[in-house]
Image 1 (cartoon, rainbow over the protein chains, first blue to last red):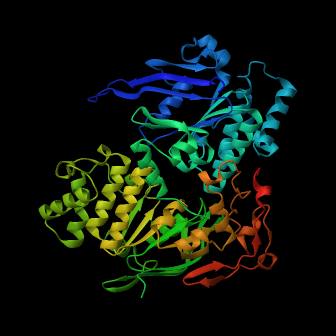
Image 2 (cartoon, chains in turn blue, brown; image 1 turned 180 degrees about the horizontal axis):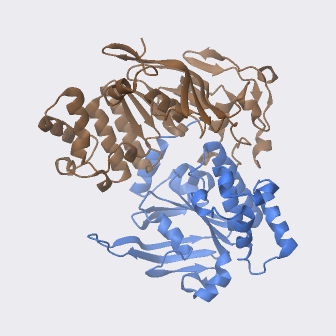
Image 3 (tube, helix red, strand yellow; image 1 turned 135 degrees about the horizontal axis):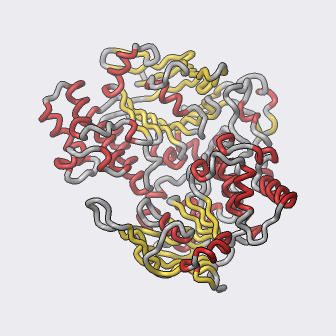
Amino acid sequence: MPDPRLRIEDLRVTFPARAGRAPVEALKGVSVEAYPGEVLGIVGESGSGKSTLARSVLHLQAIDGGRIWLDDTEWSTLVPAALRRQRHAVQMVFQDPHASLNPRLTIRETLAEALRCRPQRPRGKAARQEIEGWLDRVGLPKDAAQRYPHEFSGGQRQRIAIARALIPQPQVVVADEPVSALDVSIQAQILNLLESLRQELDLTFVFITHDLELVGYWADRVAVMRRGEVVEQGDAEAVLQRPQHAYTQELLASAADKRVRY
Amino acid sequence: MPLLDVQGLTTRFAMRGETVHAVEDVSFVLEEGEVLGVVGESGSGKSVMASSLLRLLPMPPAQIAAGQALLQTESGPLDLLQLSEREIRRVRGREIGMIFQDPMTSLNPYLRLSTQLTEGLRRHYGLSKRAAIEQAIEALERVGISDAAKRIHSHPHEFSGGMRQRVMIAMMLLLQPRLLIADEPTTALDVTVQRQILDQLGALCRDARTAVLLITHDLGVVAQRCHRVMVMYAGQVMEIGPSQVICEAPRHPYTQALLRARPSASLRGQPLYALPGNPPDLREPPVGDPLLLRPGVTGGDRWRTERPPLEQVGAGHWVRASEAVLPAWEEVRDA
């Protein structure tokens, strides 16, 4: 087995006590690994800590213990200057592209900003070509560049968000419920797009979702989270077909309840 | 006689000088104790259809342009679409219950549950405050809220989303409406909670013979929980029939496309069937088969200028006579 691209060791995050409430241990020592080019599925219900895990990897959430490694770099302890230079390596796609795109920027401006994250960034004409190339790659018309986020449908906005995440040339993409807000036919379009980009660019995905059917379809390996802990992890097919932990079994039973044979 | 008989429901919106044809000539019946699933993607008209029946649309801009919706009540059939504002308000809550995706649209954040759960009982059934509270506590217990006698005095914000939806179901248990219109009631919930809520909805229609119109985008919910299903696209009914038949052997090409687009473990490593393009702009409603406007769809020329009729293809199974041919799998993978 190759070395993991992303290695999370014993990650701990505690949210401090708020008025009248005890501190919340959002992550109680989580260890997971994502290997180069694979899709690591993180499944769990609300409050399981899966989004906190994502935010920690993105440096959007301070951690209280444990380490995160990106290849040989200790990612979680990078000082701000070093992080600025390397931030491009880990990018994120959110559930709600409406909230994650700046409504005041044209698509060109949003993508140009993403281009500036690259270590060697193209300028002028090369930059323009790069942006247009990406619009085409994610299936948007050329004239999309001049337009604003509100002029696009949910599926198109998610295409823009994907372009923005991939333009910096990341190694790891953290996708937090990237298709959950979309209609089923649009969901299929976006999943096909993500998969073709993964193959083409050899990307590693951390794919966070509550949907076991999605994990069964797309993830190579899966970690099942509950209340800040990973209760089970392994090869996605094995975990979904022969779940060992009672909670995984319960999740699968609830999902099986909605299966369609067609 | 069916509990609800909807014929030719047509709802439009007048927006900035344009007309959006949101619901076009929708007809169906619903029997006592039956669960009819309504599936469709955003903009298919499923929610506008439900809100038209409940008369919850702001008019203007909405306008119910045609149709009839006869609900059987103790005092005889009522046409929901013709009732006065005052009359429909009486019908809502007593004859027709409502559950929405976000329970906070129905719950008042300022009132304790004790007040909200007993209001209808007292108004519609004339119970005393004490008797109503007792019943409400029992209903909360039945939907799995522990310590109900204490928690009935809480405000809605003290509950999680799943718990609030349980509270809504408790309210339905108390009011026992003949008809329940549930618009994406479990969409925002975790899968284990979804299952519990759907179990409780099922029990409600079994025990109280409540008929449920269950609006959802989730074909899985339909397959397992609904007796019949109605598939909507572009404001029109594409297919209606027994849910098991439709989920296993869909006849309409749009239903087929919807089912094929679903990701599942058995499709691992294969691209999903992603019908290209988007649903039509309902400001210019399609004159013929709306599916022909999707890129890649071929054939069906017979229905280019005329709307295909609904044809019966099996017991209780009706399909719009589309002759559209979906693009091949290889053509849509990179769409």
